[in-house]
Image (cartoon, rainbow, N blue to C red; front, side, top):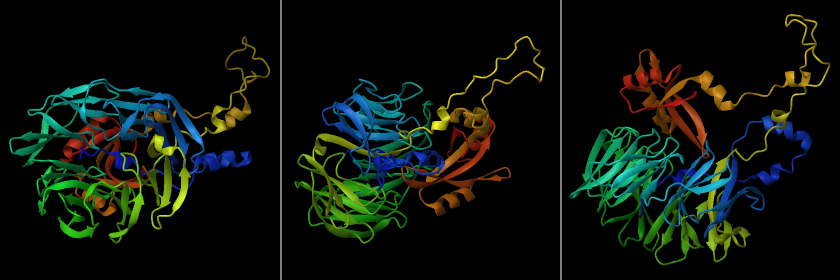
Amino acid sequence: MTVRTTLLALTLALAACGRGDRQETPATQATASATAPRGPDYLVLRVPRNGGEARVFSYPRLDTVVFTAPTAPAPAHVLAFDDEAGSIAFVDAKGFPARIDFRQGVASTVTKTKLTGLASWDGSNIYGINGGVVERYGPSGPWKWKPPLAARAVFPQPDASLLVLAQRGDSSVVWRVRPPATKIVDSVVLGKVNRTLRTQVGDRLYLGSGRELTGVRTRTMQRTTSIQFGDEIEVLEATPSGDRVFVVTKGGTTVEVVDRYREEISGKIDIGRHASDLRVDPLGRYLLAHPDGVDSALVIALGTNRVIGSLATTWRDDLPFVAPDGGIATARQAAVVMVDGETLRERSNVADGASDFWFPFRWTGFRPRDARLDKPVDFTGPPVDSTRPASDSSAPKAIDSAATAAPQPPPRDTATRRSTGFTVSFAALLVADKARELAAQIKVGNENARVVTAVRDGSTIFRVVLGPYPTREEAERIGRESKQSFWVYEGGP
């Protein structure tokens, strides 16, 4: 099994309404709907598996194309989606990192350097390993770090730090660095690691060493209690919040369930056959298991650990996946078939869909602009006598009254940067109680950390923050005085 990336976090995509429906809204309602708050649009990227035109469709009406890029490399798997920049980072079929930029309408290879262990947290910075040396490619340019031992795997973190796994004899070590600095700021030593799993929110890293599973709390780099299994660990998967970890051991015909908080095996799911891979529903309702040597997927209801049944499907990196409306996309010969997750009945059929690589995501960037933002200013009217003094109030004003009533706003990012300062962020969690518990422990001067909520990829995130502060220097000082792991970003919380 390869090192896990953030693909799962980013497939919190797809729901039950699409842009095609919005296009049928009467024109008289366009202005009102443009100002009404609503979440991101539900979209699906499809790229020919051999490379070619990249197309984005609305969901669930997959006959509505909202974006095309003329040529994209053949995709192998997605690393992450950057919803700020509007680009998807992926690995192409040749093993090179690549991007599709929706704003620019282009797709390109990031580097021709052959990298292994490619990973990304935010879709902007792509990490990989070249001969044991860690390399990063992102907006600030390339960065390299040669660790004391050859790197085996990299795990970018939401606080912009990087965890690097290396082997030392019969043991393994995980280092933390904060690029672009190359100083090791923390480390932890474990047994020889052969399986890895990073939870979706990034607060735990699970490492399999033979029959032993150990977790690392990524914020403090503390080890959790190790759990022993009857045979060597082969497959690892976790729920979106990381509260349960699913384990398949060598030759086993069950999925063993580890309770993260009790740090012990809490149950087993008998699937009757060894599973070579697991894939979890981004909303935590279903677990898909791939039985060895069979073109099918077992559907398991996670609320009850009940095996609902089996679906015919080819098991690929992109398919099958579970949509938030409960549908499961399956690959059946040349078609992609959507079925209901509970009844396993067919919902819809895309006849030629299996020839494409599929990636579901959420974004607002394809929405049409409010027409008022593009209304030109009318400078017609009585000419202004340039010989009159500027203070002469009788001079006619060449300003359109409509423009005065609805001026065009300044660019959003510029306004935000000038007014909201810099925020210190300590963690982004899926569990509100855990976020409040952490916030209660952080106090700098007379100011306590607080919890703010945000929605990312369809999931509510509880962020522990301080600020904002007027300058980055002050925010950095507050972060250091907190004695906690932190990162600073520009803008309000």
